[in-house]
Length: 97
Image (cartoon, rainbow, N blue to C red):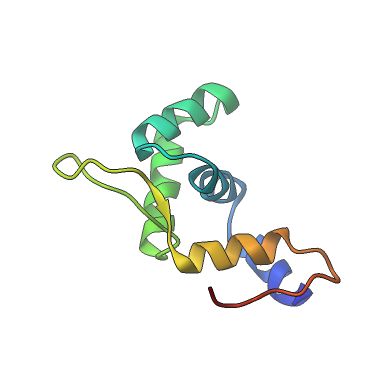
């Protein structure tokens, strides 16, 4: 399990991990969440938007659009990624819900 955790940490960049964990911790539309992250971290909004789009293409998060406003959500694969990244060496991971 530790090898998979290391692989995920090398595959996803810091901004993607920040967005993924923020989506998991907040119930709000993506634009508002990204604006808050920009203000808190100083990461350019365009960089955050690009990384959010990459996470959506990887099916780790979902979010609405201009015509379909809804809260950003972590998809099941994204939840698995978060569990693997947060797991300690001795923790057992349940791979399904």
